[in-house]
Length: 135
Length: 244
Image 1 (cartoon, rainbow over the protein chains, first blue to last red):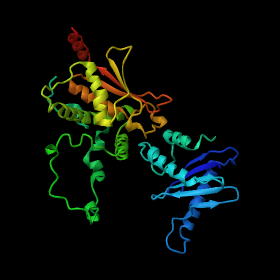
Image 2 (cartoon, rainbow over the protein chains, first blue to last red):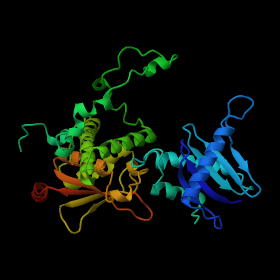
Image 3 (cartoon, rainbow over the protein chains, first blue to last red):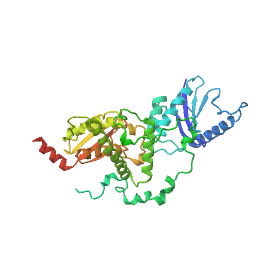
């Protein structure tokens, strides 16, 4: 039961927010994070066209041997991605709450530019209260 | 003081800095106002009830009809966010931005005061108005705040250093709840809007003052804001006379 990481990917596939919540994760450069987020965006676009029975919203959970990646796609195309341990069952709930915080602290902040990286103290603080301080 | 022209505070344009006035000229910004021929909203709502005749004039409505009506906090925050963005794009610095927000608030304050007085005193047999400073500040702290934000402010303080300064403190101003001011805008306080409302109400009561807003965060209340009221000398002199 652990939450490792949170990503927010804008509708163009750019990583606008990334934060670690656990120790001992591989240290990546911001460029590597951008590449990973872009790749996930591409995979997600492909999975949304794979459904044999009509339209689909794309991948929601990707599970590996040691981790689980949960994707929450909003109506506007923004993706909230949570990397957790496999045992974590409340990832969707967390993502829903992150979405709420995003709507409040980011979208209602006059100093935020849409689709650009999120630099908002209020958002950071509220995420910390929700998930924990992390690193 | 003779106002041959309309009071400068009643116009957004007249009080603004010369450098940014041209932003408002219709030639440079007409594109912002021209509406594309988008289909009207009403045409898409097929099942909506047809409206019965024209809406009643706002002046014909009961004054108390909307007293307890509530506005969605989200919609208001989005609107206020747009106001700040719109204003921010058209000013040259923080001071200018704060003054514009103050001016916008001033226009609301004059109306809030009028509406409040009509609601409270129109049916009263012995209508009254505050002529002493402290009761007037209490009215702002409680009634004005309740009318505008739905809750009273948290404290009134008198400055120790300057006799002409009073402070109204709000621990969690609703308009600032979702605003994170970036570091490069340092001391900006969007509550200048509230300061404008307070200034207008004080002016209306007959206590001319300069009112500014300052963020004074504490660990418990990160968006705590102090509305600083600097009264004009004439007000203090009159207070002295009234004391006798």
